[in-house]
Length: 207
Image (cartoon, rainbow, N blue to C red):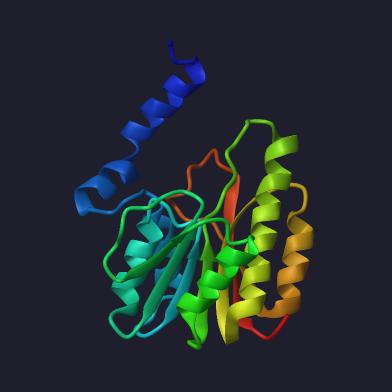
């Protein structure tokens, strides 16, 4: 089947992308790791001994970085509806964390450890129609926020990918209710034409 002009353009852009090339050379699973690297360098989210939950983790770039930074005393728990190849030191659970059984399994893995950081790079399968894609992406962000509110320790942090558009002001207000500080990040590795940004809630003060 012939590729469309749009998919052909995406493939060319993907393989010409310096972050894609760099990720291959440096052994990272995805270019997305450079987004987290930049945010972490600025905001110091990953520290030795931390407990981290990575939502929408596959293929695992963020978990790779997280487990490297939290070290042996720390814990990285990753979850995705997609399969993910194992990463040494990362506890991976495949499933929809919105389902009660999966949610409970995540809680069981975390145990009684206080959670320092919940991070979500989740995005829906994009249809190209903003009237469909935007509500889906905001729904995922809201689910991640709900999870963060349930498990974060006092003064913990929450990082979530969102897309600018309808529903974003409401999400920002919700996060401001729960965190002492709300920051917006647009890493250099985010493609310029993408309207994705990252919201960072710092200093969880309760739901």
